Length: 180
Image (tube, rainbow, N blue to C red; front, side):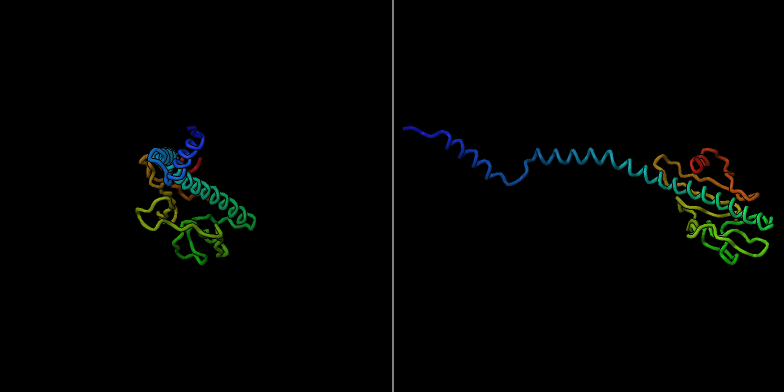
């Protein structure tokens, strides 16, 4: 009797292939390990990039406000108006507003020029973070840091005086986070 071994071997492989309907436990564990490693790398990067985005926005705001102050001061001087800029958060009619940066104080003609096309809303409460707060008769503008992973949730204060917005914080490192 002669048996055809190729058919028997083919039959065994064929049977093994057709009975397999799911992943093995080892394959599933490997996928879970790979996902775990990737998430361990990615999640800290995403959280630090969110803090970086808040600081980048604050830096952009400071640069834009300072440029707007210079432009407004130059416009006033060219018109022969030497009125000092004393506030940055007034409404278009000179009243109070919920915005940190909205309109400049009035010139001699009583005009209130806008700082931004879309004003920046001030902090909604004392515990609000990653926002601007206004105090001290509209002269102190404070950026409150976001809740940072390193525990630094301080603030940087800027004072409006002599038509300039300068850092007046006692901690220079806090100012550098927002300015540089």
